[in-house]
Amino acid sequence: MTTLRLATPDLELDLAPLGARVHRLRVRAPDGAWRDTVLHLDRVADHLDSPSYLGATVGRCANRIAGGLVQIDGMEHRLSRNEGPHTLHGGADGFDRRTWSVVSATAARAELALRSPHGDQGFPGNVEVRAVFEVTGRELTIGYTATTDAPTVVSLTAHPYFRLSGTTAEDHVLTVPASRYLPVTDEGVPTGEQAAVTGTAYDLRRGRSVSSLVEDVGGLDHCFLVQGSGLREVARLEAGGLAMTLVSDQPGLQVFTGGAFCDDPFPRWAGVALEPQLPPDAVHHPQWPSPVLRPGETYSWRSVVRFARVD
Ligand code: GAL
Image (cartoon, rainbow, N blue to C red):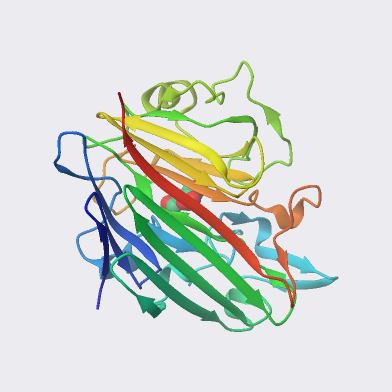
């Protein structure tokens, strides 16, 4: 089986066990026609040759870990390094490349599971992950939980690239209610500073078009610290008479405007990845929320993708 179909009269999700992946997500647009809302390759297996993490569940640790090293309780762990000296999205063989098992599936809900053994990509501890996908009306809810039998690092995210209409997202308007963002080095690793967005191109609080961001700062690949806590709106994207609201319980939102898709058949700026997560490289910044997970604790992550017409 390459995908499971979850559907309501107005929303259709093709969910791939390969990478617990939002492979295709279609919504009934205001004109009654079905509209694709996320970038996808034709065949699920093609994702094994893609460097873009299209729609995947990313783990054990989303984003970059500087130098591919983590220290937990004084013990150093050398991780799989798949972006120069750094670890990106869990290492060379991340959760996005695994075939998750299907625990249960109905027409509107599916639960997938993955066991990541001790030493996987260099991370300690046996980790058990569950991913639940559920559709209602024009909404998709994704929930992750994880447990471990030894102290380790867990920070997951879902990695769909949204494109609500057209062939690129350049005309899409993106709003992110964040007053601070994390500047990064040339290698995409946070410098440790939390910069105010006021008066900069990174102020997305009143909405900005992707093309204006490309013009001003060459596009985005940055984590925004979203105001508030708990489940709340973390982003809104609008284009072609459709609005997508993203709700999440995570403190950070990585915004990647799709500056390059390498070997994938998409033009630059074809879609915007909006990835709720803990701050990148948080293992090296004790002042940020910690991604360390210990035995007896349950990691949890939740987000809702909600579509509506723009009036
Ligand atoms: C994003 C990351 C980008 C790039 C992309 C995959 O999450 O922020 O720098 O690595 O994934 O192509």
